[in-house]
Image 1 (cartoon, helix red, strand yellow):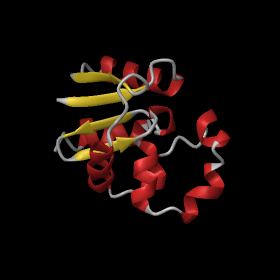
Image 2 (cartoon, helix red, strand yellow; image 1 turned 90 degrees about the vertical axis):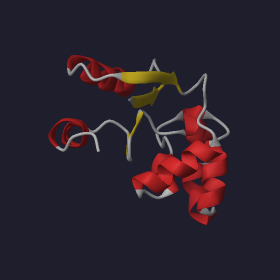
Image 3 (cartoon, rainbow, N blue to C red; image 1 turned 45 degrees about the horizontal axis):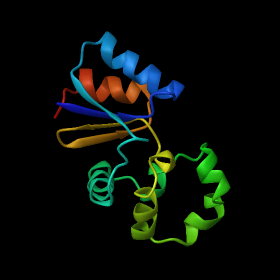
Length: 122
């Protein structure tokens, strides 16, 4: 089962959800604003994705900008970045799609197509 973590009002999340629905893929829906990912989840997802923690930040978000994270993130450890991400779902880049053995961060249709339809769900 896929876990689809998003913010329902986000247009990119809406596009991703439509994409999943059109392909009749089963997923569990989770509103990132109401059910923020925990530090433990973020740490596991970050490790699974092989991406640096900074790639999990929603750099277009108002909260990211108001906290001046563009300037602060480079001097923060990965641990500190993950701890910060766990404080508010609006800091997290979305959607997140978590499957068995993989995590996709953001909606890139070609990447989702490759992982879910071409390469299978492994």
